[in-house]
Length: 313
Image (tube, rainbow, N blue to C red):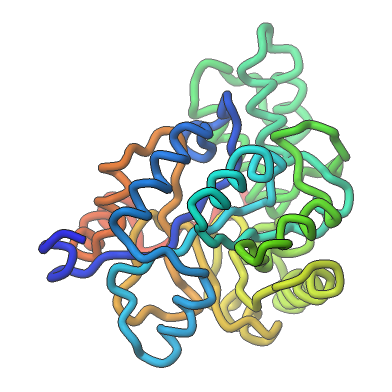
């Protein structure tokens, strides 16, 4: 750890998603090669510990300066194929946040299917996907069209694709099933956290539905998997005051978001920011965003202290 890091404070929670040889969304997903670079860098520079260890340090007021935790959202099959071998080789612990509806089926996620269609030759399937949520044809080569689709699904359908989810045998882009997830915990490096039943935008739901999405996911995971922690990763990183109350009522001790920056020295345990990483983020980017000294600049760049919730049109 550098002198600047020791003085200013550094560390936090890393958030990864899919890991594959050809990332679909470079800001979100990462190649095995880049992931290894991140892990080797973090292991050299920080103390990598289980997420629950950092939470417990915050609970008792102990310093987390120089501590980092590794997390994965959505339990992608590519994590088992590409990330877990690296974690085991380097003896790095990690938390996987599981969406139980997807784990039950081994289902794919709507945003990955949409990105495949956007990038595929011809635009017929992409146009059909847009039309299925009431959007007009949009230029597939323009990244803003994907953002328009995401906003429509969040605002009009609470973040869930309207025609449901489907199982898949894809080796990288589906969710791992429960039996596959349980096998990952055999050596004690992997534990699991809550990512709701159906991956909705929680602030779009009624309070009782938010509680149920979190609590029932936690109970189901606890029945099916070992080492389940009462920590929720808010889907899409989205939350509001009602979501925070719902997480507490559902029995959580911590809630983590997607804000791309280090937490303060003693964060609100239900609004802990994470540093989201993908193929687009090199080592310098990771290091900058783990520095508490740069938190104010990152808040200004992001336009707010936490992700904004799209509102219905």
